[in-house]
Length: 459
Image 1 (cartoon, rainbow, N blue to C red):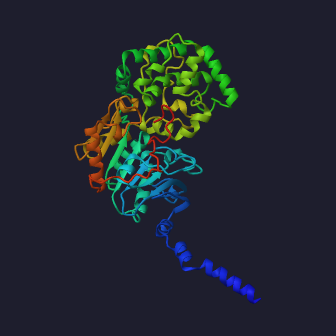
Image 2 (tube, rainbow, N blue to C red):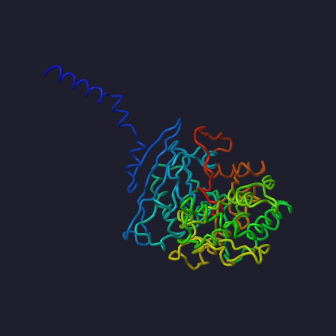
Image 3 (cartoon, one colour):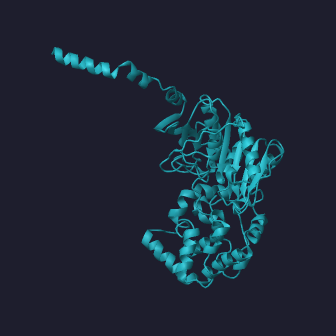
């Protein structure tokens, strides 16, 4: 009996030793996070100089009626120091299915913490049941406002917001509705479709981008694909059968999916390729195999299917109802298209989610950015289709830079050296970080691609 008591006491001494107890109790960051009302810690991983948390935050489904229902919005936290600046990253889409520690360019340049937010209605951050009228730019901005307000109790230093493409647009909208939340915005390749039907900037882009020979080769690929419609649609139908792809739930038919993918091929080429890739464009005399495989590589036959589109219905819903979308002339395809009105956001939605466009929100945001915004930095790519329609920043401590020859992945590092220096200095000044500060970039934290997994022509 005595030996058993001794053994138990020895075990308790191990468990409750000062060092062990200190390790168990001395975690002020975790305690602070758990003390934030509505915030839940899902998981944590650690690196050489950071901690990474997957979190959820309870949000009202409708901020105008906060007691009418709620949902859990997913976010992640890359923590370096409570004294460091914090970057709010809005990618405009869902976070990766298995979130991992990544850092945006501003996060790396500032040695900052980073809070990444999944956009409402991208699963799993969707109310159930879902009232899709609650998916608008003000509601998402209000989500971010509540998150920033809650976390400023832990991160009291300056905040910078950033995002690429639709995420850059999201950062602009947050700034519009809650200008006091952050100390500056860096928006990458963010389109400003202020007047939805007025898309001449996109047509001018495709008339001038790259070389004449490359533009001709790309136009020829589209023409040839549509001329071979019967044979290539049969291939698409065979691929759909083999892979379990369907069309009836959204775009409608394999023929419509085929046409939309062909129309998208040139856009997708310039969005993600460079002028050097013009050499890979098939000749108009290429065989069906080469033509079909090239289009699959640059645009993806699987995307305009029910399975490819469903994860992005929230984007298309927003584009149809508020954000707008590019409508191109496609004059070189006259007489070859079966569906002249196909190239719209509503074409990628199931019938019950299709909406009429409301032009007021984008007009309002554009006017505010031009006249009243401050501390906003816009970065665009010279050869990026989405950069054809740009925001025009005010003269209030704001700027716009264009990365020469860059595509949809344009960033500060790809600017001309003088512009990169100016943009970096502006960002660091906003964040309260010395311009001589050498950013602390952990080698085991990769840079995020900033595009939120944008599929082809989706922003």
